[in-house]
Length: 262
Image (cartoon, rainbow, N blue to C red; front, top):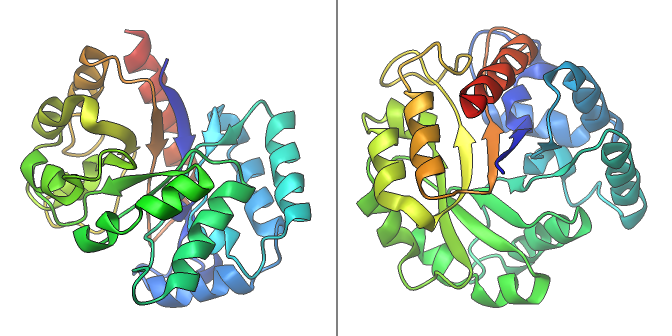
C-alpha cells in the first residue's frame, strides 16, 4: 500500500516570512541555525491535520551539526507517538571523490533517522560512486529528476547502479521543464523507488500549488504507479515563496487519499 508523507523543503521560506521569492541558500542557513529539533517538531505539529503516514526531512532541517543520537531518538519517538515514521531524507549528496566527509554525513543522518533511502538530485557521476556508502549504511538512493524531461534521461543517470539506486520521480520538476510525468511514470515502471508528488501552475514555474490544481495529472501518475504495484512513499511537496503551504499540503493529502481510494 502506498503511504503519504510530506517533504519539509515545502517550508523552505518559512523562517524568512514568505517574501515572495526564493532564496534557497539564505533559507537553508537560517534553518540550520534555528533551534533543533524544535523547528522540525513544530512543522510536524502544524501538519497534524494532514494525517500523514510519515515525514521526509530536507537535509537542512536535520543538519549533521545538529543531529545527535539522542535527539534522533527524540524525533523518532515523536513520530512514533503520532503513528508516523521518516519516509526518506531529501536532498543531494556530495561527490564522494570531492568531499567524502559530506557524502558520509548524508548517510549517517539517514541511518540515525532510520530512513530507508535518500531522495535528491545529483550528477549521474555521483550516483555511480555511492554503492559502497549505500552498502555500509543500508540506505538506498532515489535519483530525483531535476532538469530531466523524460524517463530515458532518468534511466541513463542510474544505469549500472540498480543495486543501490533507483528512480525518484518528481512530478513537478518534470512538468515545469516541459516533460510528461504520467508518461515518465509509465516508462520507468518498477525502476521507481520513491515519488515526490508536486504540482505547478505552469511550465517554467518555480512555485508549487496544491495537488490537482495545476498542470500535473496527479490521477494519471497514481494510476501508472498502481499499474506496477508501487508500494513506496508518495511525498507531497508544495514549495511556496509567498504563503504558508500548510493548507495546501493538507488539501493535497486529502486529494491523494481520495484518488487512491477511487
